[in-house]
Image 1 (tube, rainbow, N blue to C red):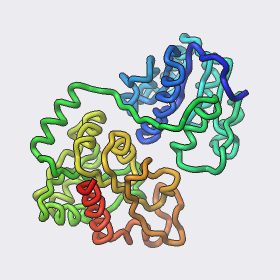
Image 2: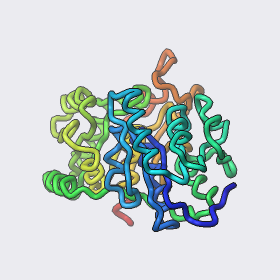
Image 3: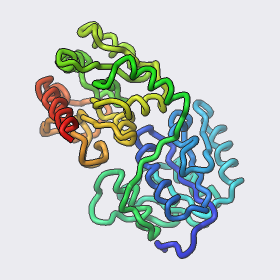
Amino acid sequence: MGRVESAPAKVLIVRLGAIGDVVNATLVASALRRAWPETEIGWAVHELASPLVLGHPSIDRVHVWRKGTGLTGFRAVLADVRSQRYDLAIDLQRIAKSAVLARLSGARRVLGFDRMRTKEASWLLTRERVAPRTHRGSMVEQYLEFVQHLGLDSSIPTFELPLDATAVARAEERMRELGPLAVLMHLGATKPANRWAPERFAEVARRLLDRGYRVALTGGPGDAELALRAVAIEPRLTNWCGATSLLELAELQRRSALVLSCDSGPMHLAAAAGALVVALFGPADERRTGPFGARHTVVRTRPPCAPCNLRHCNQTRHACMEDLTTDAVSAAVFAALDRRAGS
């Protein structure tokens, strides 16, 4: 089918999680809004990532699957979705539960990824499949293929985030504590194999602090132990782990000089917020899931086993992250800061 001759009245986007994927997929909602300003755009999402779409300027309605509600919660979300009578449903997640939600939404037209890019046979549930244009590219490029498939303009990808006045005020207050030369370090990552040792973060922080920068650690409550290990090495660090909301984190990143992060959702959030990012990659392919935009820097080594995309390293030595030296990461951080100052 492809190109849409007239704008649908209602469009549903299904991208339940995770944080980085939801951030990047919001580009689709923004592109649809530019092309179809009168169309009502809905989004189905898990509760953890919901702050990224609740109040989003291009999203009119959010269907939240509450944490821990299981099948009961899914039924509630589905009933809420069906009540809206969507014309078009777009499954950007490519797994069974997202495909079921899109297919049962009641939309006459259901778009999903092609067979080769889906999991759990989810392609069987879509009515129309979007094939890759040239190659598999980054996930951002793959999301934008849906926009192109509909015959709409995807030439200027635009990241938008919800504006939360409380988050802005708290971020401004925190950043006054650090001053203009503030570097944020995000320690955690959902996949253990993506993490870099907090002691190494602390060593890079020490070099920044010695040159007059201020450094704050960010992360969720689960990253508290990592932060304590870093602070034990470098007591001058400011520790904000577990102390910020998702939108406050974005506002802090937006106001920072640089964000140093492992491959994680907050890394993508930083890129979307307009921060300068230095990203540490190991098991994943940065060409597919790296921070979107040419201004960012990816630091990685390439052992024979990488990229493997595994959650836990299955080798005798976790070479892809262990071989990322503090010298290499420090050099990348200072080079990025110098370019920023020069521009």
